[in-house]
Image (cartoon, rainbow, N blue to C red; front, side, top):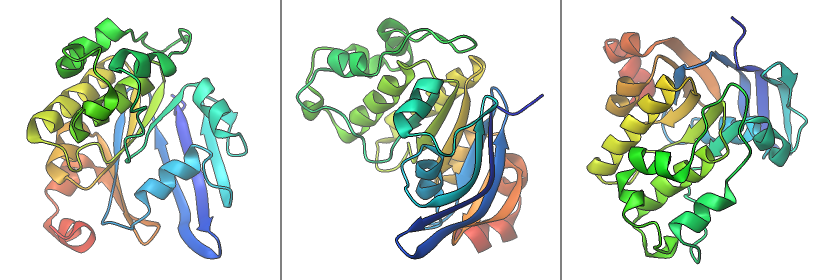
Length: 236
């Protein structure tokens, strides 16, 4: 089976600084892969480069059979590649429902159809505050809203950047359930994460980054039981 998303020899730069070095990985339908590594390892940069948000990069990114590395971000999103950034970019003056409407796209062949009511079953907290302005929500609730808004685009693959960082344990639990629900629906996920326990619960395979290079690959279960790799690359 051909992968939904294939990244080959991806290099990325900020100005003259070379950040990513020949990063390569693939994601199959319904698969969750984790990009792990310490702060500054290149996880978020990898996602931005895939999503067309970096001007200076090289390499190949193929999504659903199309080479998208030269596409602008809005075209990539319309193709069905969703992106949830780390910094919770919600519209503070809009309500939960209004924020969801900003992410709405038409039904997409081969992808699950998401509606507000379906999302509220996955994120019960949001359903209880559908008329609340986003600026009056907690950081964790805003994180859930950002994910839900992305799902309103009915993506085939979601890039999910540090979903468990800085949010309450109850929100982390809902995030994990959401990822498993997406997996059951056939959605693929690329998860950037530092929380090993969270990644272990939801991920199939892992790529560990260090200084912009992939240093370790394997199943999530293998990494969880490889004390040397965890110590060397994750500091745990």
